[in-house]
Image (cartoon, rainbow, N blue to C red; front, side, top):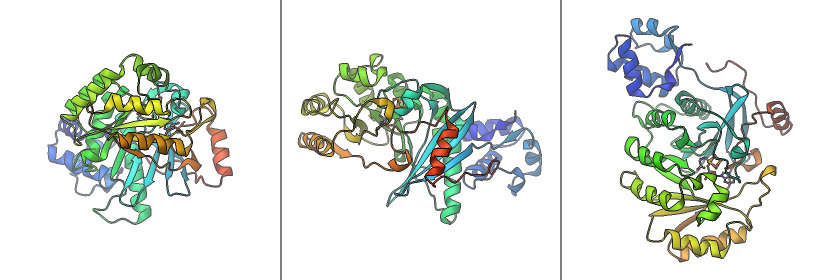
Length: 374
Ligand code: SAH
Ligand code: SF4
């Protein structure tokens, strides 16, 4: 099969071009055509040497993901479902805000961590995405939206990327890092390190490696103030308990582009939302980890058997943490009318037909004709 150029960060593309006898500046040109202009057809790349274009033809391609559907929420959030073959699909969600556009990207089809409150976790693990499949989500959405919004050269649709879609990004480390580099590269998407966030359930050794290899903003999914409860909610905690995880967060901050770690805390009614949990969180975190807490109202799905904490409970919990000096915000839920909210991304692995029928019945899917993107 032809080499997928979306799998390469700039250094890898330069090495590939070198293997074809071309200099690095040719790779830079090619990289800019692909990522900055959204081109996939070598014939369009007018300033690229003919010799290189003819070498690329047949040997390489820019292979995006096939979007199976697109669903828009009343609040402006848009979700795309991408076919990744073998009956698997992954989702990416665009969340427009006043001052920026955020894209939530998937890193795996399914997830092996198996958190109790997460629909992706319930689905189990199918496979890692390749670098090109992670990048393809941004490549597609950025250029699709630029066209749709009529943006001119120099304007971009996505200026913030969060690895908070399906999968545990730090369990797909080898593919993740080149994808991050492409997002950050000035010849690629030119995103600021502070505006690319890796969210993890706590793969401690990989937090350390990320610090060395490609420090970006870090979010850690905490969800519990003690090991017993966290063991039950996030099974990975049995391998990397809280003390080790928080130490890794502190080490990470040495090299991080921000001076705090975001700690995500999904609010589950009667499970982790009591005053005693708030007090325990304060004892755990205060003076130990520079952090901002982000409380996420649980987005329910039938198989979880869990309920969202009532609104007043979430506010009372937030107030307790704030009064104790911990910076705390409550995440506004976006896109829940299209199952695009945190933890609702299921990719519809088995029942794509049913999913399509369901979505069509909501009159919101626009099915994109096959083959529209390479
Ligand atoms: N695997 C990574 C990133 C993907 S999950 C991680 O766990 O951090 C992204 C975020 O969504 C995590 O903070 C996760 O805890 C949260 N989440 C998962 N399921 C959720 C649900 N049903 N409701 C609200 N948030 C959820
Ligand atoms: Fe995986 Fe994150 Fe879901 Fe846990 S919350 S199952 S780590 S995707």
